[in-house]
Structure formats: structure tokens, C-alpha cells
Amino acid sequence: QVTTTVEPSLQVAPYACQRRTPLDHPHSALVMALETLAEAALFEGEEARGLAFTRAASVLRCLPRALRGTHELSGLPGIGAHSHRVLQEVLEDGVCVEVETVKQSERYQTMKLFTQIFGVGVRTADRWYREGLRSLGDLRSHGTRLTREQQAGVQYFEDLAVPVGQAEAESLVCLVLDATAHLLPNASVTLAGGFRRGKPCGHDVDLLLSHPEEGREVGLLGSLVAWLGEQDLLLYQHSSYSTAAEASSSCRALDRFDRCFTILRLVLPTAGTRVRAWRAVRLDLVVVPHSQLPFALLGWTGSRHFERELRRFARHEREMVLNSHGLYDMRQGTFLLASSEEEIFQHLGLDYIPPTLRNA
Ligand code: 8DG
Ligand code: MN
Ligand code: MN
Picture 1 (cartoon, rainbow, N blue to C red):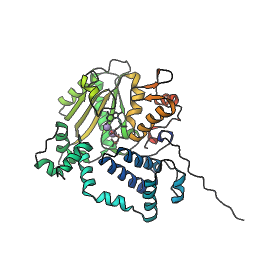
Picture 2: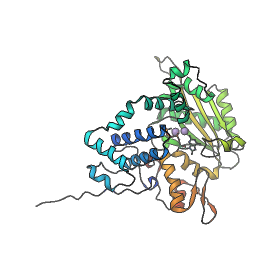
Picture 3: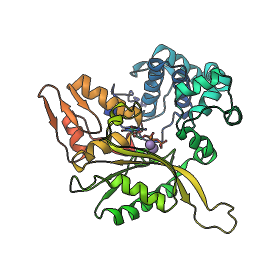
Picture 4: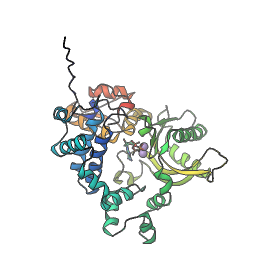
């Protein structure tokens, strides 16, 4: 008697926000290869090419089981000819020559180093590269003109290069909870970003601050920053306020909330042998009016690709505009209210995807 097991074919929805993408998956080598090429394309200012590699990588991240061979790639959405070639090579040879060449190149390594510095984007990194700069030492010794933010980024580079762990994230949440409890009773502190998606570590901690009585949150950012300063915990901060005229012209901001990008002095748990009592960590603070909190939480939880796909889905499939402030229905000409993330997914006609499955 012969039994045949029919392998279920891999079904993948076209938008990342329609898919469940856990943190752990069986294709890390394939994903790393594609994400390296995505990063390298962005370093050259080739946004569209970068996005194509990111899309392909994101499809592999969501596969419910390991690929059984190259033949299974053909049924998947978003795998272009170039990505297909790279994946085939890694599947067959274990490595892709193009990826290895990129990783070993001086250009890629330098751009990766420079863009890792707090306050340094692709354009600045590229300018320094063309000026012949290659290392942190070069930046320091050539007297390169740095913004205040970049000076802090270079000064605390070694600390900030060490990922923030879950215990450190928790102690930052406690610190901010303690402070807000004094400054504004009943204020809420909500962990967003990668940690909300279940990541064990991240490059920073993202916190949303709000208050159940809308309007009470006004002024909280200023008083919190002042408090952190008084406690001598503030190594660097850059705040922007939605009321200030410059907020709308700030090109890096995706939204108009009061926000503060900080580098904090995180006091380390006492241990007899430790030389240092603290280390520098990045903390992002965003103050959100209560009625916008579900939208802000959805917007600040990420991943960046999941967010991009949510907005693309809303616009192209639903004629709606989604951002961290709200959801606008262009056909009805109205804003759709929501009191939870679940309701936003409902408005969009999407199955709810919990934060831990948004690692697209
Ligand atoms: P990591 O820190 O663990 O490395 O990753 P992450 O938490 O996913 O990335 P992030 O850079 O901290 O960004 C978290 C989310 O915040 C991301 O989905 C984008 C979102 N976000 C906004 N507005 C803005 C903004 O103005 N600047 C930045 N940097 N992020 C924003 O919604
Ligand atoms: Mn983060
Ligand atoms: Mn952040």
C-alpha cells in the first residue's frame, strides 16, 4: 500500500499587512542575503531597488514552513528576477557571490558604520565617504563638522552599538512610569517599537505617553524632559513640538506629535566587579492625545515595512489614508474613529494581526 503525502502549497497574500509574520522563521540565511542587498541599494540612493529586495525578504519571513526547493519560489508574490537569482544561489551553494562581494566592499562597510551613528543618514554618510573618511577615528581627527546630534552619536557610539536588552527596556519603562506618576497622575506609558513586537533587543526604546482625559497630556513632554535633566539622566535630547512652526518642515518626522529623541544615562544594576555604573541608551518619547492613541500605537509599533504596507493597502485597496493620527476615508470624506488597534484593522477590512506577528 502506497501513501502519498500531498504538500500544501505555500499561499502568501500580496500585502505584508495581510500576513502573519513572526520574529523567528527558518529562512534567516535567505532573508539576510536579500536584506543586505536592500541596505546596499539604499546606500546608493536606489530606493525602488531597495524596496524590491525588502519586499522579497518580507515574503520569506512569513512562510509557515521551510522552502523545499527553488521550484517553490515561483508561486510566491514579490520575488523579482534579481531576488530569485540570489535565493537560488543561496539555496544551491549556501552563499551568493554578489552578497558576499557587497559585504566585503569598503563602500558597504563604511556606509553601514556611518549610518549606524545616531543622527547620520545616507546622504551625510555618502558625503563623508566621498570626502575620503572611513572610520570614527577619521571623523574625530579630521575635525569634520558635526551637528549637535551627530556629536552625541559619535561620543556615545560604543554604548549605542550595544543593543538594548529586554531588562534594560523594562527599567526604562519603570523610570518613565515613576516620573510621569509624579508629574501627571493617571498618565499612561505604552511600550511600542520592536519590543512590543516581541524582539529580545533593539536599537532604542519607543514609548508613547498619553492621558485618558484628552488635553491633560499637553506639557507633559517638557516637564518629563526637565525632570530627566534634573536627575542628571539626560545625555542628549532633541524635542519637537507640534505647535512649533518648524515641526511641519522637519523632514524626518512622519507625524506631528510632541516628541523627544534622547540619549539617556541608564544606571546599571550594581555588581561588585563592574567598572562603570551606567551606560548610554537611546529612548524615543512621543506624546499622544488619547483619541489618537490607537493610531499612534499602530504607527509606532512597526515594523517599518509592515507600516509601509498598511498605508499602501489603505490607499490602493480601500481609498483610505492611514497615518499615526487617524484614518481618512476618501470616498466618504470622513475620518474613521477607533478606540483600539483591532477597530482600525476592522475599518480596513483586514484580519487583526497582533504586534508579535508584525515582524514583516
Ligand atoms: P529597533 O528600535 O528595535 O531597532 O526597531 P524598531 O523599534 O522597529 O524601529 P524604530 O526606528 O525605533 O521605529 C519604531 C516605529 O516608529 C517605526 O515603525 C516607525 C515609527 N515612527 C513613526 N513616526 C516616526 C518618526 O517620526 N521617526 C521615527 N524614527 N520613527 C517613527 O510612526
Ligand atoms: Mn525602536
Ligand atoms: Mn525609535
